[in-house]
Image (cartoon, rainbow, N blue to C red; front, side):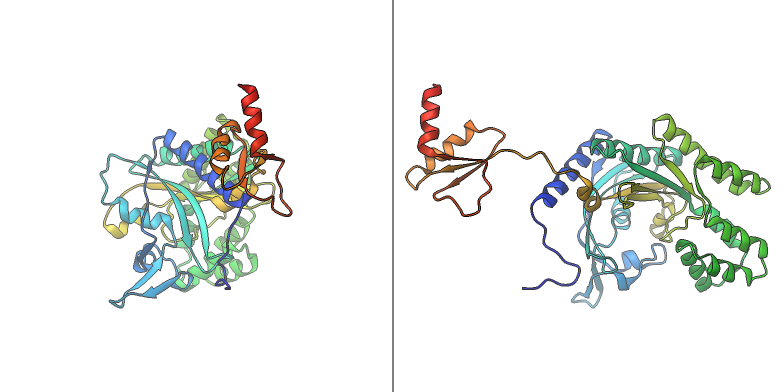
Length: 373
């Protein structure tokens, strides 16, 4: 039988790597006082499509239930957890999750994630705890070759306010910034008559790099305290990361939010060996407005599939086959304890094209055990 587009079977080393990635993640976050949470894999579509979240229904795996309401397979952990956490006791501030999200606008419909959420916490504390957790986790995975990128929603939003664009034009401009299309950004912004803002937005597309970018724009925006405050905030985050020994941190001042609920610092981690995104996240206080709550929130999600693919093959254990019969199968099973930390298989007949390192008839193994005694 064939599989639906985007679905795939998984076997062998890939699954082993995923299990190891998840196991290490759980150990790291539990040691940092995060508490586990899991939401249902099936949710109402409106949880994700309302104006506060802004996800598109067309990207989701969906159906109508018996009452005629649209249900979906969970397309986003952060939103689902926000729905769950408004009912939880406020004393617990740090949460973690592990599991899949389902979207039909990617190469595969199922993506495995592991993430953290921190709520009702000082903003700077929450941001650093998120980033430091990411650094600790990547170190535990022996993944040292990564790059962390910081951005902030407030920069684009502040410049956007002066343009007075229609909602559809704002979205087109935001997408053009995301795609780094200078021509389209300039075209949309300049037609409002705000030539200076159009030039600033166009220039921002290439405003990424180290601390020198922050210094350069602090001078350019010296008469715009709102923007200078954002630059200083990003600088504080980089200083803290450098003090921890993390040197590969850059900023992208032209970065724009992908979902409406992001509302401050945004961060993304890349594996330098292949350029793939291994984690992403940021602040999203606005997400809780749909529940009439004013709650600070920050977090990030790791891409388990990407991290698993980047892992080196695990050390191969010796593979041993004990040849037995129906009469000696119990003996063979009892002999397993003599081969600790080995992969032991019991067969009645040696398979063709086998990959065992050693083949031991049960009689020989029994004799060896007797001699040892």
